[in-house]
Image (cartoon, rainbow, N blue to C red; front, side):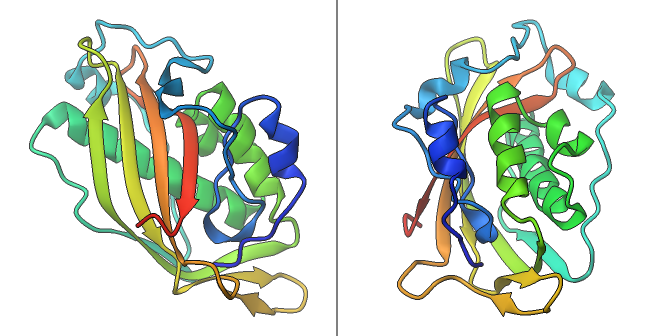
Length: 213
């Protein structure tokens, strides 16, 4: 999908925030912050949070229209807790897409799955789509999930997004745009997550690199 340069990245570089690059709002480009920035953000996950608690949290229902599909491939793990990390990381990305389509940078579902820093950058990313929506489909694949530390309340989740069949669309003219010429349509997302007391894994930071997949 088209990625438009915007002042968003520059605005948030000073706050060490990380912006998403997928699908054409402002680049979710990163400041030079290590992915271990999982220890940043407003959330302070409880070490006592358990996998069973995750099933008790009332997660929002996120619906994407037929005009846009996000297809997740290989998003399974034999560890039930790591599967929860995958599930919540997946929903955070879906919430981002849904927020763009709804034109709502403060969407409740995006907030639900985002720590303070990730919510700020996610909202800025959505605002970069003013007058636009997204159409087509993306493939989300090759997830790699790992715990950070022994208490298993921090984790990293890397995955790839193939945007070659996704497009941004001008709401007034109907004009669509794909990935700019010379740029790879495949983007690697490098995220860090923290576990809440209710078992929800919130995304704390997001870093992306086009062409890394």
